[in-house]
Amino acid sequence: MGLLLDSFWRAAAYCLHPRVIALSILPLLLMVVLALGLGYFLWTPALDWVASMLEASTLLNRLWDWLQSTGMGRLKTVVAPLVLVFAITPLIVILSLLAVALLMTPALVSLVAERRFPQLQRKKGGSLLVSLFWSLGSTLMALAALIVTVPLWLVPPLILVLPPLIWGWLTYRVICFDALADHASKEERREVLRRHRGWLLGMGLLCGYLGAAPSLLWASSALFAVAFVILAPLAIWIYTLVFAFSSLWFTHYCLYALEQLRRETGGEIVDIQANNPDSPAARSPAAGLPLTPPGLPDESKALGLPPA
Image 1: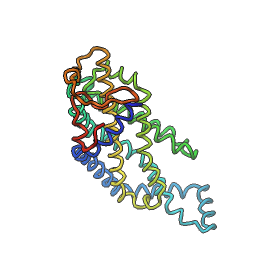
Image 2: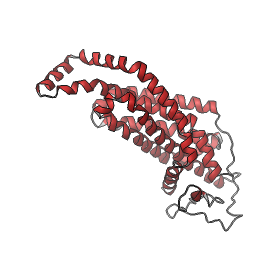
Image 3: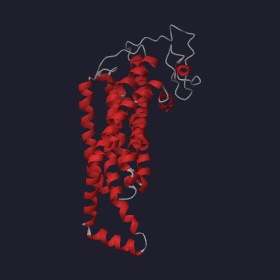
Image 4: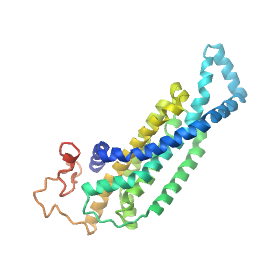
């Protein structure tokens, strides 16, 4: 738990770093251009198609007539946009995650490694090509799970549970691999994931709910449904920040876990704290683990934060 909380606050602090903010611009611009382009060409045809499908339903027509008799007939005009928003939101979430994983995570891993783990040997256990196939395979499995569970979304509590669970699992799969790809060997990556699978999966699920919270807010708003094409950039920006935070959280956790693994197994990590007894590295009272890596006492100052 100490390592979990320590990684959490460090990830939040790094989100304010100018380099992280600058890195978030590229996936944000890419996703905004893609969303606005597809929205410009496909939003109206897709909306008309959904409206025609709803009009063809006898059961829904009876519901419209009942709403009209009760004075709530205007609700009919926002149903089609809401259906379309609910259908598109999972795709935006997944694409935002992949954009962050491909365009930001390698640079974020390098940033964390440079500041906290400069002595951590890079064993290159996962190449860019392997990472790409891993991400695509995990995404296909997540999409299949979303499609299979769509009928269950009609049960009111499950629509608040299933999509975030699937997004959280995908976050765990993709970002854990990328966080360890450059530094860990294949065997080390497997061992870290084996030892910390429960905590890492819990982190992924929490990140999934962080990403789902804004989705539920604006998907339940008629205004957002009507102005979806205009407000989509705001949604994508929030998703980008959520997944950038998730990437930093997993990176801080996984690299520290990797360092501890190598120390336990006699790896090639040099304990520079032993050579520098004056190092003021802080320790977690809960877990007994160092919160500031040896030899880097000025990390919090560099981020404008009080010492850990």
